[in-house]
Image 1 (cartoon, rainbow, N blue to C red):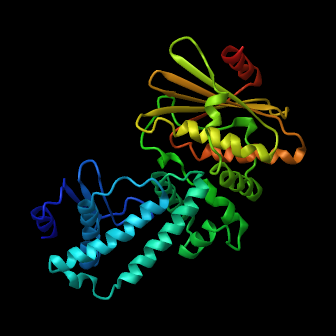
Image 2: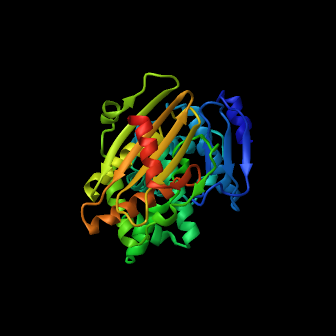
Amino acid sequence: MLWQRARAAGIPLGRLAILRRPLTAARIGGAWNRSTGDIWVLQSDDPAETLRRLLHELAHAERQSPRPATIDEDWNEEAATEHRARDLAQRWDVGAIFDGLPLSRSLAQIETLRERHHLAADLAATREPFQARAAYDAICNLAHSRGWGEATLEAALYDADEDDVVNAAIVDFSRAGLRASWRVGHGIGGSFGPLACQQDTRSGTTLRAALHQAGALNVDWLSRRLVISTDAPRRLSLLLTLSEAAELPAVLSAAQALLLAHPDQSLLATWRCYGEATESVHTYQLSISVDQETTHLWVLLRPRRPRDRIVEAALQRFLLTWAEVTAIRNESFAEGLLTLWAQHG
């Protein structure tokens, strides 16, 4: 009935899908597609809740708001849409479905989600609304897989759980959803072989702090540091050093900027780790191919002090969060030097 009412009111709509199972552990109630007008809604055991979810998405479709540029714009729109959904309920004579659910409670839930998405964005080193939503969904999936309840998830987001292991482990969520499309021609996953570092609370804490700083960095400097080949297909290279924790945010920022570039295309990415277990100097290479362009990020890891070895563990931990969509390979240090020389020599 609501769907027919919306069409009769001239709201541009595509298709409607009712899902019986949630798509993610975040249990998103529904979504509206700006491009197609399609709507999907998660069915609830409470029929009134299912109708409330549908009304919310229909209100989105009626408002036709532009894509938000910030996280706050995103959640301001959610609040305005909730107001409009209740207006539509009254107009279409179904206002009773909101009995017992005051607007203030719905808006308080939206404010909670606003804050959580800001925290998820910090952990994802991004301020893009789409990526913040994807990060929060992935964090909820991680929490579900670890058996965390709502209280533990909330505390971990704020880095305030009594167990430091939990506060550190939240960085392990999959970052695959931070872009819409990938290619996996080189396979996915892999290992660091004999160079694999032990992961503990310290590596998670180090990575968490670095991600927070990386999200605040301006990546415009990347274009100035790229070495661009003159032959075709075009090849771009960037070489960074990593000797201590203070340099980790720039490395993470560069890697993520490259992994999330060209968002409208499918990207192919491979990590390679070059080195010997008996030596402290290792190199890491991120190779990214899209269309007729290949970009290589080289990281020369050269710890200044024994305590700086934790930086490599944190870097590996970050790489593993992309393992669902990227390949990870381990090769000899000599092979790495040959490859680096071929590109930069």
